[in-house]
Length: 322
Ligand SMILES: [Zn+2]
Image 1 (cartoon, rainbow, N blue to C red):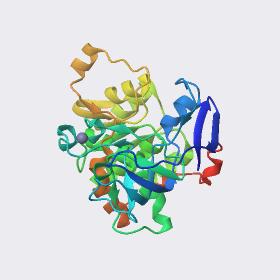
Image 2 (image 1 turned 90 degrees about the vertical axis):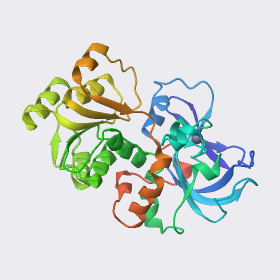
Image 3 (image 1 turned 180 degrees about the vertical axis):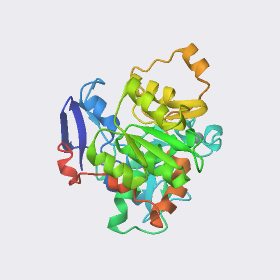
């Protein structure tokens, strides 16, 4: 088969590599229905994270099970399944506590931009949909593998409750789906920070009630103005830079929550500043597996349509263009 391999900055090739087979008895082999490019793929693609050797790409996936190892009991060939970017056993203490992305046996899935994928720990990692979906549902189901689950976790980590005022920092796919998650949970005001017109439009469609275009000090002042000088109940940080993290912390009212899901790049927090901010801070790699059953149900029943975040669809052999 052929799959996507990153050779170095701006050098993605679609080339021949071995088709995966069952290695461990807990593996499954799935035929990919759709995969996508993640914001985190851009760090090595742009040369910000080094690429030491040709590296297969892709960690967001859904597809049809072709084969399972002899120890797999709940996942069956023919099922349409979705899994997280971290394979997890779903049985260890961290999984049972709700953090499968910190599973004691976690394995990062890195070869999904290909027609066939080996998924470790299949019973723990994969969740089957009620039936094989129609084509139009596949984009939304694909987002559940990472971006939708990450936006959802941002809202959960920030303790979003009905009636709250929340702010979303970042208008990439995760930020937009954090807006959608806040709306789904029932936040009353959702302030999206965005400077891109097309993303502002989608943010509003997903449930944003207000848009703030400033950054840094000005954005914090604007949020304070909009909340009678108090700050937001919850702020969802979906970028991962020093500026976005400080924007999030400073926009939150004392006693409020910051949910942070942007992978930090060079973020450093000052202990004293954090101490006097009186905020709750929770985040990390989203425990996507925990949310899959509920999110599949919402997509399956037409309650949410997170697949709208995709703005380009290409055949797999044009992955370099993607
Ligand atoms: Zn585990």
